[in-house]
Length: 464
Image (cartoon, rainbow, N blue to C red; front, side, top):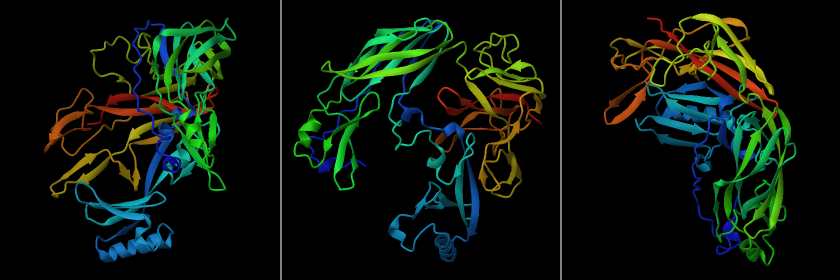
């Protein structure tokens, strides 16, 4: 928590928000641009998170039902007896359906009959297996309390034979890098590249933060460009305001040109200087040069490659032009699925996802319609996943997207259609010609020691 007002408004004027504009440079086919990240910038595990809803009770939409619902909540420890404690609150959506939000991930909403359906959400990390009713418990790689949370990433991967322009972000007074060196020039070379980048110079203070101490005082600090905590002082210091004023919020984006020569690894180092020319730190980053930086080495279904190299004659999209339609469409409904990882990656799980379907009655009771269900047994779903082994035969789904009305024009897949509903224009998934099957591959990166997800969608002619 930040308590700037305690220290003094003059000393704690917030730094201006600035949008950095990096000059664009046309890159050759064997060149790429990337940015060096802080750990907190890629902590998100959202690709690995699945959520499901579980129904714990249904109550009538009246005072008696509300009282019963609240009593059940209290019995389970979800709320206390005081309404104003913030653990439960009511709100209305655009359709004026009542809804309730409970703490610990519990919430409820109305069904079509205007009953309160009380549910809670469970989040699961498909890579680690960690499950919780709090998304934050499973959706992170680094805790904000970790010493590594704010640090610059310790390693990067670049492709052999390719030139990489590495963007280095600098902050809180730092504006320059010097003495850029490769510790293993036979693997890659490195030098500063001044044709790209930008500097923002300001007299404003650094991005000041504070944390409370046991004695009630606050430690005042900021993070430098390496993610190291730089302590400015203590809130009880008589000169704390002048110390804060002496910090600086200047920042920059600087570039390093990396030329990858052969597979291997080496250290990239550079010194960091602030706007006054004072050295503030030295970065040391392990650079891995790989023959192929992509996760998968082999990814085929029925002998056809699902990788992005469309020039290969065995690719599912071989021979297609940018103006063509019906990409990723298979003429075979079943075949062998082969998935193999490149060096430094390990495949931990392969899954085949197929859409659920559900038949519902129209609100007026005049007939039924079929839709891909997003609630099955109280759970929010899109695909039903089945684990498989590499080298095994699988069948593609024949179930495509449906919606309440089949009169809208389909695109080539029959999956998207834009139309106007009253005054609101929106896009919906509707009945069509081709059904999607999503192949989800969970992998472990041995270099960054993190999990990730990749995959591909294959389309096959839908069942009439």
